[in-house]
Length: 122
Image 1 (cartoon, rainbow, N blue to C red):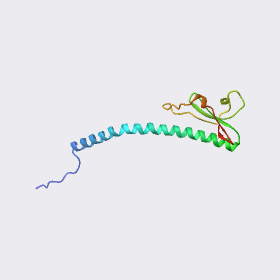
Image 2: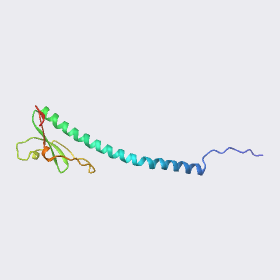
Image 3: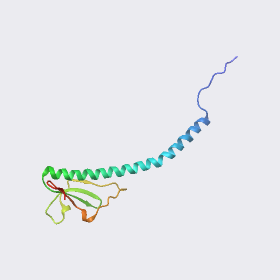
Image 4: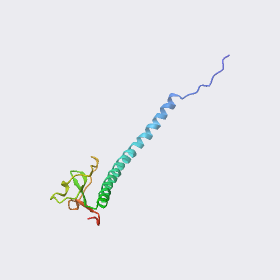
């Protein structure tokens, strides 16, 4: 007489139910993850712009001269302040271009920003 051996494993029904539950969890997680990625891009770009402004300030103090932050066609640049009619025409020290999905609005009368060694932001 043969003894019945106990089989181990999963049935097809159990595997299909597991896949259905995982698919439901994935469907719930994807919108939250997309929002997380969008928020992370905004934070990253704002931190990068803040770093650019901090660089201009520290360069002005460190070199005891004036530096400007200009915005031209979406690219933000740090340049030494020159005597030319176009202050944004000097050589570029550092630049930042935000992601294509991000738009940084600036007021025309607020730019260029000027940093100097004594007064800070003018």
